[in-house]
Length: 182
Image (cartoon, rainbow, N blue to C red; front, side):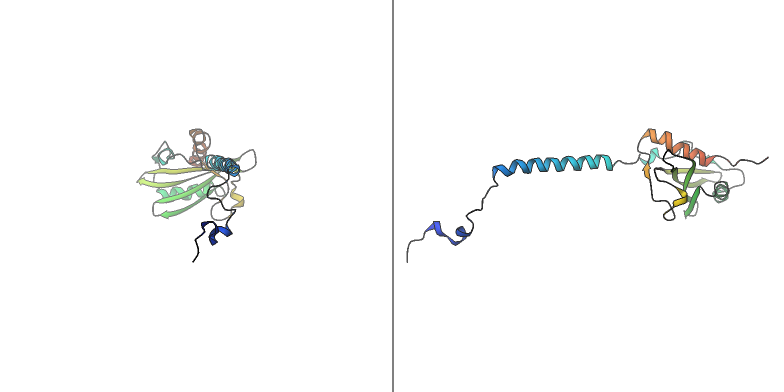
């Protein structure tokens, strides 16, 4: 038996270029790369993940809305369907609740429509309530619907300005009474 030579252990012979710590020249590149990646991810998240206003700000401010005499929510929605045959889409997920999407008559500068959606609920015998309102702009078009409801556009409102300039005028246009023909 000879002496054990620690310089010639078999695991050391194969890995003479291995390092326990990374080289200093590569570590500054890694730090800059990670900082750049973090910057691009944070910019993407701050621009792409904006959120809607909270639900309490997406309620119609003049709730409850009185119904015309002798009408319930179903009669009123039938009259709205006749008033806006091409601009209103609705369905009833529950017995006294309607989900609507209304497309305004006015186009935007790029040729699309501004639309608004909401839930309508009959909370009293003579009144309805509008809640969970949203607006959709850019590429919203009732003539090019992709399904039951148009999937294109940017949802809002994301600010009080969008709420007052886009969403509320759209709902006011929907709530206009039918024009009487005289």
